[in-house]
Length: 334
Picture 1: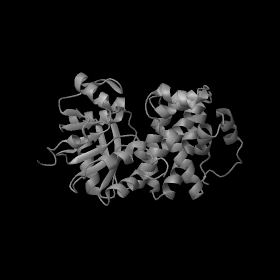
Picture 2 (picture 1 turned 60 degrees about the vertical axis):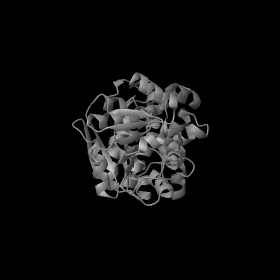
Picture 3 (picture 1 turned 90 degrees about the vertical axis):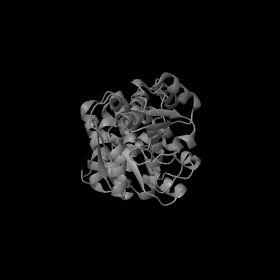
Picture 4 (picture 1 turned 30 degrees about the vertical axis):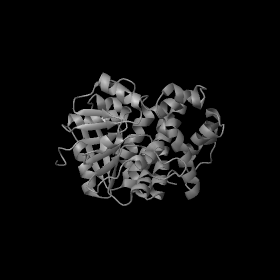
């Protein structure tokens, strides 16, 4: 079976995994859509629609849902992981060995909880040396499923690997750009979620457009400091996986992280806000990881630090705002 005719395994049938499966199927490729939860897969099979996470988009015949991981990976040449960051390592450990010819990529945006590692480091430890790629950029699942024009970045140190992932995703309404900055693209996709919580809090407190613009701009500076300290390239953070994704998730209420911030500003507890949202809010765990990395590397990230305080240290949104506004003045370039 040739690479272009072999099915693609999409591991994770949440809203984003389902949306990417739809993209691949619309490009004429067969998809094996796997999920750990049997009830979720049984519903996809019987209803031919992801009514729980992405309702209103029928699954074409090219998408085959399965909860059997061995079956999902049998005969595939490409694997795309789309599970939350906290489940990334356990999924890799559960997978049967992949041949060196199988391309492995993920569209997960986050860091490994506890170790604060980027996901390519996790994959390298578990799978050994192999070509890897990450898909990131400004992309809400529902808009991708609707076929609204979207552009993302596929990053890999190996340009051939980046291009093969881009090839099965790229279409008229879903543009893929390639990058060799695996580190920078991952940092952008993870850290922007923390900043989206901050803008949600600010908007929930009624601070307006000026404040939102300031938070996005200064948040980009924080994201860039962290990303370059970890080895990313500065120009990456002005691209789709940096500024593009940051603007998207900070300004639109489709963002679960932004909605969490809005809820916190209303006085809703963290646990209740997460329960109301009903899906993974990656920024909650990422905030802890970003705060730890900033301390380890001596990186000044005041906005991210205040978000961490609100989530984990009992700081109120009003107190966090006061802390930021009363900081000593400084050069914008510092």
